[in-house]
Length: 391
Image (spheres, rainbow, N blue to C red):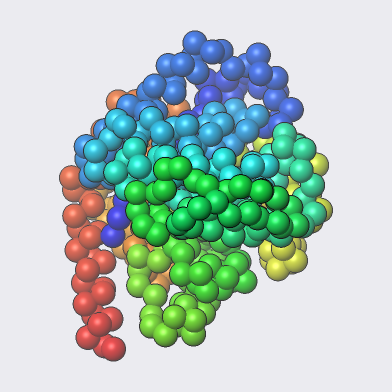
C-alpha cells in the first residue's frame, strides 16, 4: 500500500471572518497576502517532511476559494519536483475543462516529470462545478471537452518524431511538438477520479488508477464495476494498485490528543458546503446517474458527506470520511474499511485540514508513518497472498 500526503492549502484564518460562501463570490480582501505567504511555505514544508517520512505527495487545485489557495497544482509540483527526493508527485488534478490550452498542460506535465527524474503521476479532472464561473465555461458537454483534452494530452506526451497537427471539435493546433518529452516513457501514470460506476468502467477500459473521494458505501460498487470491466478489457484482474481512496486522517498518542486534533480538523467539513447555490450543481455538469443518486439520497448540493447530525468518530470512520485515533485505532479503522471496499492500494491522506497547526500536522504524520504505515502494508500484503492462494 502507498500513502500520499495531501493538504488543500486553505486560508483557514479567514473562515470566521467570511459571512456567506467561501468560494466564487468571496471577497478577496479576506486573504491577507502576508498570511498567505506564511501558509504556502508552511504547506510546502509539510510536503518535504512527508517525502522524508516515506509518503508520496498529492496536490490539487481550486479557484476563487478560501478553502483551497492552490490556484495551480502544477506550480506547486514544479517546486516539489526540485525540493523532494523520493516521493511520487501526483497532480489530482489538472482541471482540463477550465484550462483552455491543453497543449500548455502537456508541456508543463512533461517538464515536471523531467525535473523530478520521472516521479510524476498525472490526474486530469473536469473541475469543480463552482469553478466554471471563473473559467467562463459552460457546464453543457463538459465531459466531451474533458475527453478531447485527455486524448490530446496523451497523444502530445507519447508522440515521438516531428510535429503533428490536431483538428478536434474543441481544440485545434497546427504544430504540436512537446519539448522536453516526459522522463517516463511512453508517459507518466494516469489517474482519474470517479464516484459512479459508469465513470469507473471507462477508467478501467483505459487501465488508469481509479481514485474516489469520501465515497463511503459507494466505493465497493465502484471498485467492483471497475474490476469487471478491467478483466473484460485487459484479460486479467486489476490489482489493488489500480484503486485509491481519499479520507481525512488524524493520529494522536492518546484519546485526549486525538480529540483535540479532531476538533481542529472538523471545521473543514463545515466550510466545504459553503458554495453559492447556483454553482453547487449547474445544469449539465453531473451525469444523469449521479444526479439520480443524489435525488434518492435527498442531497440537494454537490458536497455532502453523508454523516448524521452529530457524527461520532466511529460514524466518520465507518463512512470513510475521517479516520482518527491512536495508531492502534487507526490500523483497525483503515484495515476494516479497506477490506469492506474490496481493497485499495493507495490511501490519499488529507492529513492537514481545518485549524490543525504545523507542529500537530507533522507529529500526526510522523506517528502514522512510524506506527501505522508498516502494519497496513503488511495487512495489504497478507490480503493479496490470501487472494492469490484462493485463485
